Length: 76
Image (cartoon, rainbow, N blue to C red):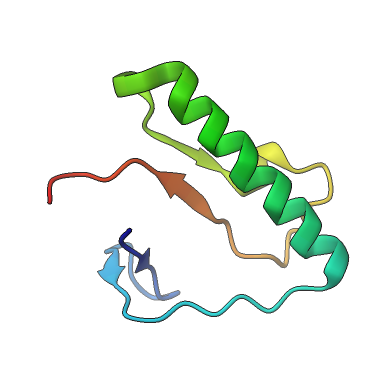
C-alpha cells in the first residue's frame, strides 16, 4: 500500500506517511462501500484497472469532501 496526496496549491502528488480521514458513521459506511466496489472493479478489470473516484461512485458525496481515488500500485 502507498498513499499520496495533494495540497490545494499544487497539482503534484506527494507521498504521505500518514492518512487521517474524519468521517461521520454514515460517511464511513459509504466509504466502506466504495472500497469494496473498487476491490471488485480491480478484480474484474485485472491489469486494465487504473483508478476510481469516490465522487463518481457515491450519491452521498458532498462538494465539500475531498476527492478520494483508489488506484492500482504503479511501479514499486
